[in-house]
Image (tube, rainbow, N blue to C red):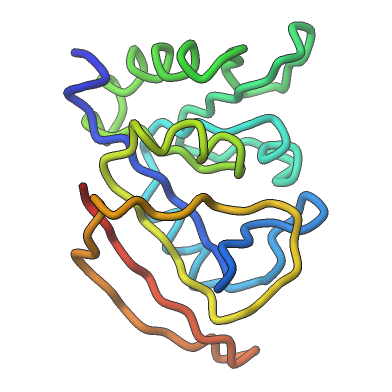
Length: 170
């Protein structure tokens, strides 16, 4: 199997200005979005940057966690470490065949990793959050070759924040 045979899926929540983070944290708390993220990625192979893992503070259970870092001495229990996107994707490719989701690698952040893998992505699982957060991490512009194939509107019961789960495909 090669990367060309796989679906490369970006999974991310972003505000109206494509903000995905502020001070290395999610700028909102939407339990339904976290549940949606878990449902999409559970049993699969996730690839993320070091800052994304550190912002979560732990590995994601029931997933193979690949972390990209430039620091050759960095390690984190329960993760597999790569020092480039290519190395992470090749490692993930080896793991994905044994996963519960053998056709998909999930890219889960952060902004730099999303930008550098957009050309590889085949699917986008986006949560559009109806906020305008002045954050410091952003998702790149969605290329025109992606078409929205599914959409669900929601409103958070506690905060009243509106959001949309949207699936895009090349």
